[in-house]
Image 1 (cartoon, rainbow, N blue to C red):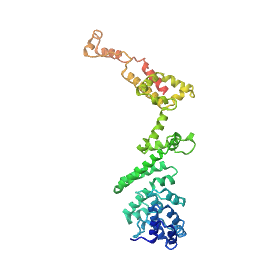
Image 2: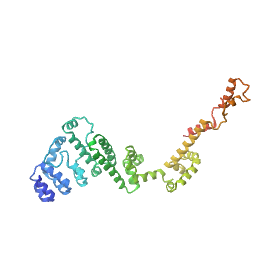
Image 3: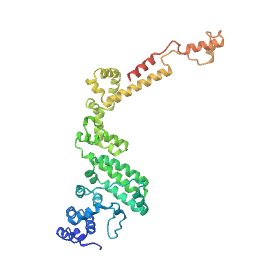
Image 4: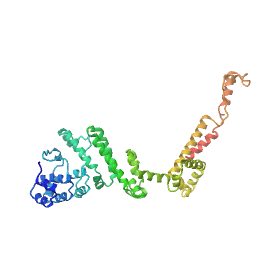
Length: 381
């Protein structure tokens, strides 16, 4: 069946036989057996192989060689493509124990060059075998998108998932032959980010995840990751219950938390009662910024109500100034009014001048009452 004695020993999980056979085979056979052991999930067997002197010597020799040569190798007897490394295969199977073994030995997965890269290596691989290059890129991204690999290798797994999703979405548009595979990896990354949010057991942990968790908390944006999710259109992450609950608590704040439990009509009634007192609250915020009233004004929901009421008032003032609702104007509904007794004996020019004078604002009137209110609104804004 094309299987070596070492393969059979791995399938039978005969550890003592495996140790004996490792002393009598070359590095290529050991490397192939290592991949076979990883595919079987044999953690103990993998540990025995990677700690064997023959494998360690061959691994050190392979590191000194050009890593790009693996792409051009053709292993007809191997069940794995030549670009599949032990770490990539372990990431494909999402085996966190084996991944940790190779990460502790300084193994990494190199991110493929952009598909539009025109470097010498990419052009050579494209001319040599375009399908092989595409499959190699897909294998690399499948390993990079492994939840176990991202959790163990990345200092910020959520940031990594966002970046990988953007890259793979672009690849899905370009390499349409592998569109379904890339879109599946995109969903896998999003599911992993949501699973990380599921692990949060309290508000502090949610804050640490959404803010990035680095640096001094006083200078850290509490919603940095959430803003990035909005920019990348990560709808599933933004709609996660933990994210929504945290945003709701920020929206109402500790001072206005009681509004969250009110009915919609009570919230509307509260807004109607609050709007007439907006100028007084604004004055209190300017005079005493550390008072309780100022703390209420800092709540996002109060800011929203205040700005909304302010803009509505401004629009009403603009409408009043535009249509001159506060001024007494003469409405001419027909031409008969032009021939009234008051203007009948006037020459045509004087009659027109008289009507314009009565209709338009006097020249000595600089500002109306509405315009004065608009000026104060602008100064207050």
